[in-house]
Image (cartoon, rainbow, N blue to C red; front, side):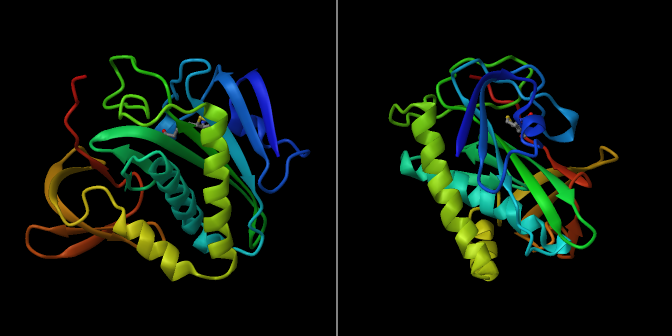
Length: 243
Ligand code: BTN
């Protein structure tokens, strides 16, 4: 069920409420404290984009396999953009890119029980109609800027929920390899030489080969060795685009 609010602090916070359950959507027209990854704020002009959270209750999923939920969500976003004729890619771990610009971001927060996932809150910001962004955002874009056919946020949200339902069913059915393969096939910068940075700031060139089921990024270095990195251990170095 979709629950709409004109305004809230963060839909991820609201989604923690005990009244919400599996596949409930908490959607807000604006957020005063929208959160992004790595402690960033999420910027979105009121009413122009989608800012919402989906509650999942994947009680069957072992905690060590939680990364597959990121894959499922990223795949549902890519399929939704494809519904609007946009070819999107997944920038590890789950930013959604069209070309070299970010069109959607995902913030997943887990509520864990002793040995399983009690509740997952999937927070999504998807840019739909916004055409100008603050200068300090490195490379934002929106469906309108990328030339997608006009659509209301509600229509896009309903399309996303259908796609999420399909990929989630795939997970429930145990088709984990299909999810991992599709996720890897859509990776941004896969099999190309690009510059990355360690958390220390040191730059290096490497090639993305794949993402492991644990969520670790496998990079092939100049000497041919392959190393696996956890989130926050390496970053993409992308040029700031001028719009
Ligand atoms: C990112 O940094 O890319 C993740 C952005 C996630 C933003 C969404 S907007 C809806 C939900 N509520 C929040 O506070 N954050 C997420």
